[in-house]
Amino acid sequence: MNLPNLTLISVVCCFLSCCDGRDYKVSIVPGRRYNSDYFYTMYLTIRQGLRSEKFPLSKFGFFLFSNLYTFNIKTKEDFGDITSIRLELDANEYVIFMFLNKVAISDKGRKKVYVFDSYQWITEVLPDGPYAVELPRTKLIKF
Image 1 (cartoon, rainbow, N blue to C red):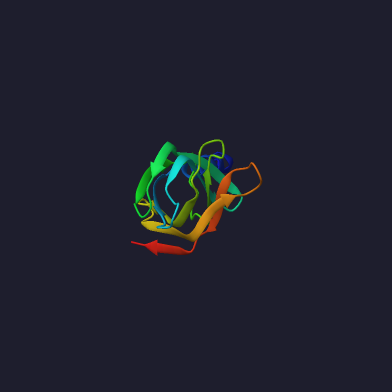
Image 2 (spheres, one colour):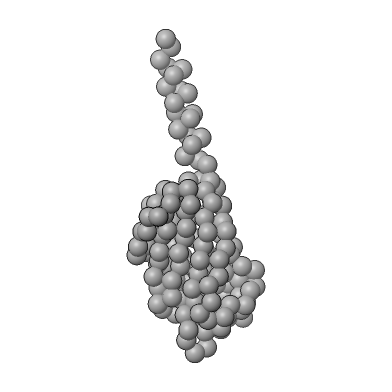
């Protein structure tokens, strides 16, 4: 038996299985606050350790408070358990402030829902910079 070839096959199989993307369903719940209707492009960055990937969720959409908005995304690689996210609004467009209650990301393959509670306004990170909020995972629900 040629052991080096067997090791190479194992490494290649491991590489291919960990590089498959995953399908996620992202649910965003804006909060009910005065002046919290929004009209902009929204981006979501998901993170696990040092790895991250950014997704456009909407292109210049109008969001009303207290509605549930869902988006489907597919990652380039398998992130495992998502530890944090960043939700960003395009600062080059008209923004009427956004109050965010929570974000939930469902992974049907793993039968998990990652919940990110916010209950805060999405604000400017730097002057003339993006409006964004960084959220650590607050709950992990298995179904």
